[in-house]
Image 1 (spheres, rainbow, N blue to C red):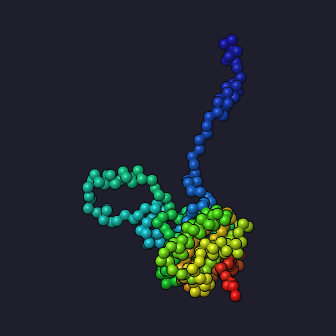
Image 2 (image 1 turned 30 degrees about the horizontal axis):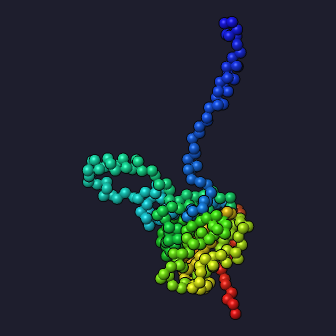
Image 3 (image 1 turned 90 degrees about the vertical axis):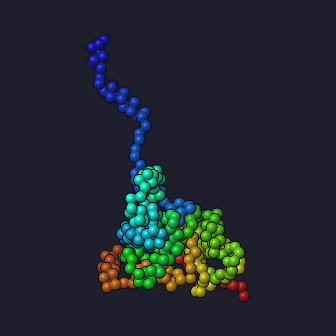
Length: 309
């Protein structure tokens, strides 16, 4: 019997081990880039950007640098860590040793807030989206960048970026989602005591979505604005931007300088240098860039109401 045991086929032991191994739970380390959801989620705030064809990767890198520059400038915050810049006075004078130790322990215990700007991978060419988080307020943030560009302030050059569109709130691209976003975004500007009568216009962009039409969006948003306000397409006080992409709808309200700032188009605000023009000409010949005057991807419209006679 002992000899038979010794002569047993060794594969039986392997098979037995494999069966036991199959019952074990397999663990895998999550990828670092899996920390953030890939898609745009209801409740996100952010910034849309259009860019030259096949230049999405370079545009994301350049915009990230530009946003980092302005996060430090406007909020004193590192856009990558989400933490305030250290005051040089904190590094000087030594201070209380116990207080310094407690400070370091607090920093260890406190979880990192993460980046202020997270790019989202999209399936549409020439289109980029950055999720933002506090303290970034997309409308004032982009308005400041574009004002500086118009005033000739030196800033990180985004060679292939075209239009920037801030988004204050998002929800699912449904009628209920539109109502929720409109209530959240429009109320601070149009509703409540002391708001007064405002002249306004609405501009829409619809990409890869068949649920909404321009007319449908216009009627719903106009109804949400409510009575007491007047439509003025050229001399508006406030402009409502509505962006629909696939199953996500976003909205923001910008000021009267939107058209003066070239509709937040960085390419037009910076203009072309001779070097830029040469690069653009070469890129056009290679078929890698849109024509300078080509419309942004998607359909855009301006809200217009015909008053009854």
